[in-house]
Image (cartoon, rainbow, N blue to C red; front, side, top):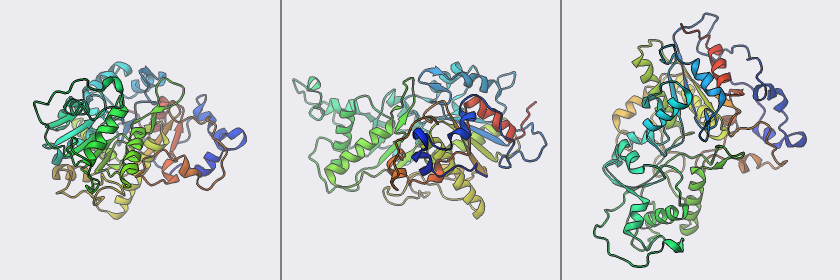
Length: 452
């Protein structure tokens, strides 16, 4: 049963000095470490018998939970010493689910191994773009990729055979990028190689030069993949757009959160609508809080359990994060999906699109996701996904919120993506703890877990 929390409207409206009225009751959790609550009935351990084999798995966010920018959070190393045995093997299945998308999985695994002092494999790392491996219908097409980092390496590792970067497109069409006067070409040379038609746009993450990316992506969408041509507003719906990482903000070393890829997406959506009068449509949205992300993460959890030959089914997933609008919302949304599946006694079809996307919101075997992947993801075995909120990142229980009693307050502060319906129940965490070390202790207690 979810821990009872007040309605989000009351939380945001605040009490004296703008502090949410329920903060005093939780200050022991998010301030100095306090005693852990008694084990709840929600854990899959059940009863008083100690369990030596896991029937649960961890889904850890990275930024704000394990690190702030490049600085490790002190509790992280301590937590992970509890999760491995003397040989460095994990005692429970663990997947790192990050909305970052600017590097390959192996690089992120190496970074985590160094920061946490335990060996991490790339099979334990899920980037926001990882589910793109399943979208095989686009792998042979020419796709425009936006973001930063080794974009071509990332795209090719995911299976894309003809990725084109924004920089390549700019070089081939030098007249398109003119916001920065210093980058305007002085002499124009005809391109020796013509680019093929761009058939889809893949947004990996926030780019460096927003004005260039926004301009060229709009050019591609309004010309049906031929950005050198005049705009044709009647080309609607536009070519497919697949987006990863919807985080409006994220936390680094600065005292306040920084713009994330979700902010870039807000800019793109509003520019497109201002020009055309129509909504930008997404073929798929990936990264937390999308359900597809958690389905893929559960697949990785099950794969780890199978590799270690743990016979006990994984019944409960614990998603540990610092962001109400992504980590908590996504975990609770997936928990709702799992419980509905359990009640129905049947496996639902995979959903990577949300209301308002192009065409149907449900992916069929002949649609975006390869049939074998759909069958694999549809075999979800978990019964619950529990949200655990830490106080070391975006979430801050002491943040003052302006007093506003309007009925629309919950809508005005919702930081989730445009295409996700706001539901106050989905941003209420099952548990709130000071840090990731306390989260591990809590879960071990809930599960009566005592490994050899």
